[in-house]
Length: 112
Length: 114
Image (tube, rainbow over all chains, first blue to last red; front, side, top):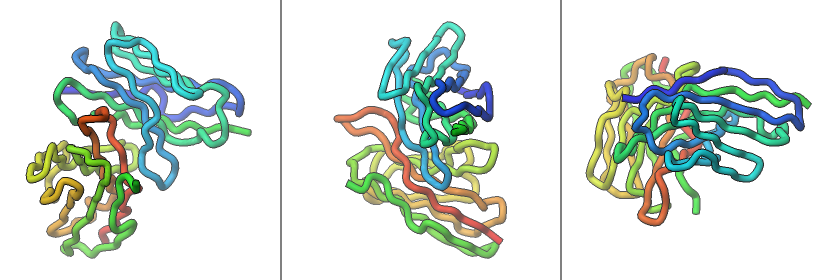
């Protein structure tokens, strides 16, 4: 099976700082990883994904890093803004099993 | 393009009552999912479907049934609601031949069972 763990359930940063949210997974055969953002009262929203044949992928103000050796995934948000305040989930998919396994989420709070 | 929609947004049931939650997607996705989200528990998969006419059990299927008679719709049924089913329910869909495997979520249904 697969389990997805969380390093910190909450993270508080100052506006303008960079944020790093971490995630660990258990199954070395996992090959697809996604980060979601969930604002209060809304459904999870896709942010960025990465496949196991990559170590890094960049989007707009976000970067995902994948370390397959230690089965660790991180989401970096540059110049964090108040609108980035939300719960962030990592999710992991393995092979042809199209079921995602979700972590429990990190609540990011951005202080003005 | 509305994405994934859910009906209703809120519902209060008494113990033993039944109801059906409707999920619709207009992205021509093959796969659809029902999750529940409880405080501190993250998202847990109830049932899922990999195509029209097919359904399968997820992590927490007891007390729920599903049907996928049309590709764009996925229904979640509670035959006899229990207080333990008080939760926020999310529907998601994924995968088309032109897209990837990321799941797109609806806005959620907040269900309270008294």
